[in-house]
Image (cartoon, rainbow, N blue to C red; front, side):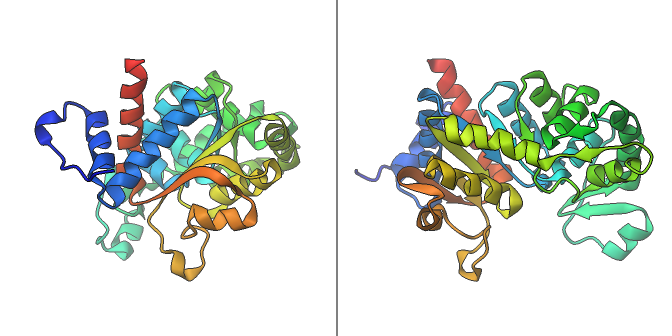
Length: 303
């Protein structure tokens, strides 16, 4: 394949740009083009597509991209962290604010402002509103709830601009393996002292088992590492590995971390199939994911 120059005069939309990235052969640019091509193949070939991500990006405007992926059914299941429930619920009722990485964190603490990177989150926009809303939500929880049930129950109470509302509306499962590691999980524990609430994580595992043992083709769009990534690829080994996979990360692989581990490493564990199409795209998901999804939507509108 010949390296081709990017021609600005031929770029009319995001997908034009992504296609030129691929032909340019330029390092991460080509990888992003490969990622969109793999994503398109998964959609065309009726893959069961998992999306995994950490909660931090839900505190940013990238939440809107994930919401659209769920609303438009561009993925079929989510594995994420409890913080996603926290931020999605909180932002349905209260605003987060632009901040800076270089703020004085001692002064922020004195003012009741929590810093997530360069996002400022006042106490009233996080812990206080989550506590208020969870008082009502826990009343509707069944005694034996899986984390999907909890996510959907929150979705019923959240607004249409939330990820969880569309997950509930479209019956798209959301699994939270570390459900107690966040404000929503802590609130459930608090209320469990007054009302019997058993969180049945094994109920989730049964559902995941059914997916991985019955679906013919399974793909993954994986953002960042941690429990979200690992829970997907752990289950994937019982399918013989993911059939196609896209990974977005900013981490280095040389410290042996899961976040830094490229998809090629997962092949050695049987978590990605040896013959699977896969790509690891190094970069910030708040930039890369919107470009990927905008490109895919333009391709889908052409068909």
